[in-house]
Length: 122
Ligand code: SF4
Ligand code: SF4
Image (cartoon, rainbow, N blue to C red; front, top):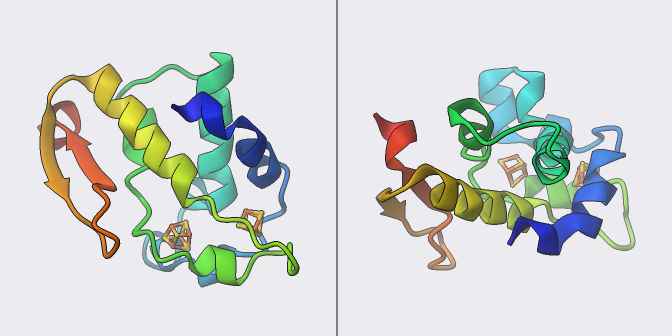
């Protein structure tokens, strides 16, 4: 699933974070790990095997509310990039890696984008 987004992951990975000030999760948490591009970098490292799936790597992809404000502020003005499908795919992979689904919240589009594996909840 995550492999499908490899080219999109690369685009966000090499970006210099122009969208960060628009991200409400960063505004609240003030951690560089929640930058839209950093989450893409971790997704890339999970694909290459440089990072393994564990509680910390999986949990990172839940630090996104799906608001797409990063896309509004994207440096690619004529073709804004949306990183949220990458995070959703990563959550899907986390479920596969982490076992049973604990909770499913539906977002405004009715997509179960906040699916949380039991091992993160516990
Ligand atoms: S979609 Fe996620 S990463 Fe993008 S601005 Fe909103 S919370 Fe931040
Ligand atoms: S959303 Fe746009 S500005 Fe933000 S990291 Fe991705 S490519 Fe860069």
